[in-house]
Image: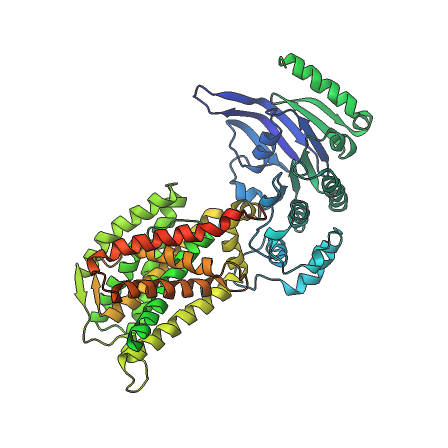
Length: 257
Length: 290
């Protein structure tokens, strides 16, 4: 279980541009839950993910995982139990290493990176199998540099790499936003399959309202640092894209747009 | 003429050690490390002192590696832990090292008449010039092989990822800062090793011998990687070794053509500018992949 308790986040504190995003924000995410998060720009979606991952500090409040306080744990230590896929496909893989090297690197997460061979030949067949399941033909290009792959291929690899080792949380930060519609669809289906198979607790930020409605078992809509919609279970099933659009429009009118 | 070629090759091989170091900081870590101008003479200073005190010259190489590593560690800690910008962190260590080097070996120190690695090699009565070539070739190749092997280990892959994608390293649960420090440690260990070999080759140390070494290393790396840009199967270390030889050959040519020694740094600077501009040209066509 992930708990955010009384989180306060202020950007540029003490400056003219001071902006308070979260004030006394609370959220609980149960184990195995797949939460989709939508909201307009600046609503706090990505900040929420960054707070969970420790990419940005909070002014006050607590972040608990399974009851353990991780508020002051450095980012890289939190990632030992968290997998994250970013909007930018370049962020999840290393362009100068080959596919095989990238997979081996990710497969070693949680263990020490010492002087054993960087390429895990014993697991090569497993990697090939995993890559084949993507249906992108990557399994025949194991020795190709990742930098020469397309954005979609890289994002698919990033998703595989993040979920290859056991993790408690999967954080998806608009991970389909930079892809063309067809590739986005493939990646989204792959995401759903992996989340179901591994039963990993997932938080997905997306601008695609249909994805938020179709996937996941809980839906949050963020606005000015608050969750103005929070539907789960049966309630979530009844939510439709027009419903969400309606709320979006109301918010826009409220904001004077 | 033959002698000139041999001594140029020898220089190229010896300075390849330094170029490997710059390859790690500049190409792999994307870190402009100015520590080099201090850690190079540091290796030489320590070597001059320990050899004068009767230490085995091969052991002197290892001692230089260790002190060079410490210099890299300083820059790394200043940059990562004290959060000083990369360029400034290097400048701070470099400046401090100038005094440190003076303390260690004074402004000049000679080791003429004392055995060096070049003399101790069992090559019979082979002339000194060939000995130097062979010893420096062996050193350049041994270090290259060790580095190539290291780059293929798990740790080596991680180091290569740091400059490429810090983000990935972080999400793998590894502290980027520690990897950067490690890279600086290895790089400056190599630079000091080069300083040690140069000291033994020239049989002297001078406090100013570090000036311009960073520029030389950068030039070697850029020449090497530009020459082999289209040939991705050529290892970075090989490219850099070739770059080092090409650069030394250019300088040697300038000297042979009769350019005065006082203009050396000016020539170096102009040559470096040329290399940078030429190296940039092909990339104007735009990279195919982001």
